[in-house]
Length: 123
Image (tube, rainbow, N blue to C red):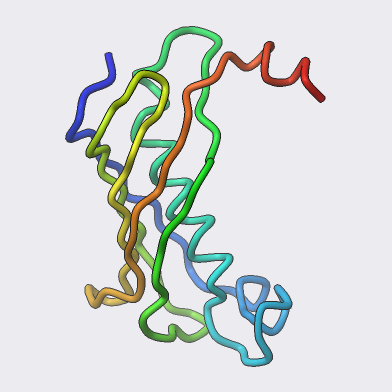
């Protein structure tokens, strides 16, 4: 059963493949904003995955986030997502990423609950 307050923390060590230089979002070897956003989305998805009906999943629809400070290759990043609102199939999460306990990014993320088979049939 979905309820507000569900949380999850996803972790990732920054490898070269997660850098702005490699991902094409910048020209420095620092943790890329797209990699941070993906980790935040993973935390949100994981927070509710075991509480969904059989055959359902969630898909990302909106991300409003700020990337506040850089992280180096080798840093361990934690992204926490908390489900803060449920409006039918629309789920809203507060997301935050940290490096050594310091906030590096934060924002709001919206996901929708979908039936996997029906969703994939639209491809």
